Picture 1 (tube, helix red, strand yellow):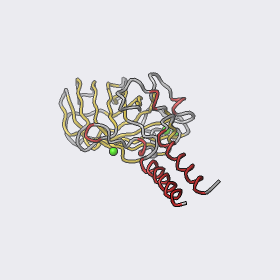
Picture 2 (spheres, rainbow, N blue to C red; picture 1 turned 30 degrees about the vertical axis):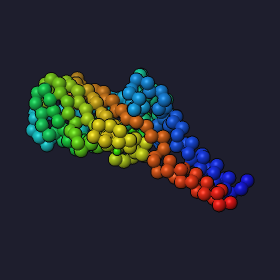
Picture 3 (cartoon, rainbow, N blue to C red; picture 1 turned 90 degrees about the vertical axis):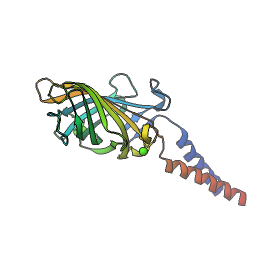
Picture 4 (cartoon, protein in one colour; picture 1 turned 60 degrees about the vertical axis):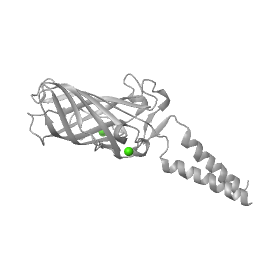
Amino acid sequence: MKFTNLLAGAALMFASTAVIASPMNIGGVVWDPDTETNLPSIKDFAMHGSIFETALEGFTPGQIITGQGKAERINFSTNNESSFCPGCELTFTFSMELVNASLTDFAFKDLALNFYIDTSPDFTGSDDGTSDDGVLWLSLALNPANFLTGGGTNIGTGSDIGTGGGVLDVIGGLAMGHFDSNGELFGGDMVLSSSFQPLPGTNLLSGTFDLTGKSIPEPASLALLGLGLLGMAGARRRKA
Ligand SMILES: [Ca+2]
Ligand SMILES: [Ca+2]
Ligand SMILES: [Ca+2]
């Protein structure tokens, strides 16, 4: 086989991996973008899980809320951890700073949300090192055009019940290139929503979260590299 043919073959392989959608395996987290049918067609990634967080104490701006949790579903309606994270766990930690709040609403800034994958599944729900061990899988921050906002009842009292959310940008981690779609409001990448209520017997709040976005099978740079190789192969062939 001629070198030019080999080159063309390699370029075709690159080009095809760039367009074949599923399933994806990014650092051990596996999902099939084609299985998500409940979302608008522009989205094909839906994560759902548990969240535990500290509660506001009154409405004084500058308070830092921290929390942690675990992904329990990806593109599925019930817990499918054993499918999307076989032999591993995908957990997260977050922090954010209060801008303002009342009994019925709130706004936070400087949200930092980091997902970690590790192969010793032992998440306890607490801030004890089981939520941020392993490899940084995805790092997110609030899109600068918005705050994390929401509302409910008894906000700031310790008996807080409510929901909140915002548009996020991916800013780091193993999977960053696979979610950097700029396809959400404000040119953001993913949408976060969450619920919270008192966790009995503690001074914490607990709830669930949903994180949605668009999967990108290969980072744009790899797809471009594939196209570049195709072009080179074509040019060599014409020359020959
Ligand atoms: Ca662990
Ligand atoms: Ca862990
Ligand atoms: Ca982006």
